[in-house]
Image (cartoon, rainbow, N blue to C red):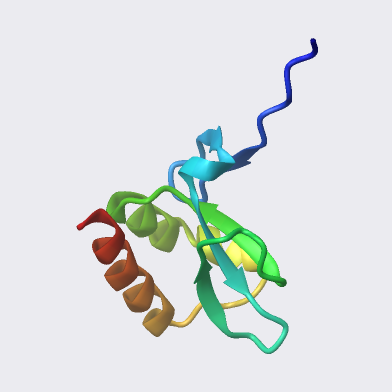
Amino acid sequence: MKQRKIPLRKCTGCQEMKNKKELIRIVRSDDGEFSIDTTGKKSGRGAYICPNVECLEKARKSKGLERSFKSAVPAEVYEKLREELADING
C-alpha cells in the first residue's frame, strides 16, 4: 500500500519545514482581521509558526508575517499572538 504524503509547511520564524499539525496557523481574513486558526480550516490567507515565543520574535524581527500576508501587521496582533502562545504552552 502506498504511504500517504504528510503535508509540510514552513515556519515564518525559523524557516524550518515541519509537519502541518505541529505548527500554528495564523489567518488574515478578508476584512483584515488576524486570528489563530486552531482547526486549520478558517478562510483567509494563512501563515504558519512554531508554537513557541522564540519563533514569533524571529518572525517579528525578520518581518516574516508581513511577507506572508503581503500587508503590515500591527503591533497589537503580535501581543495577542504572544498571549495566546503563552496560553498554549502553559
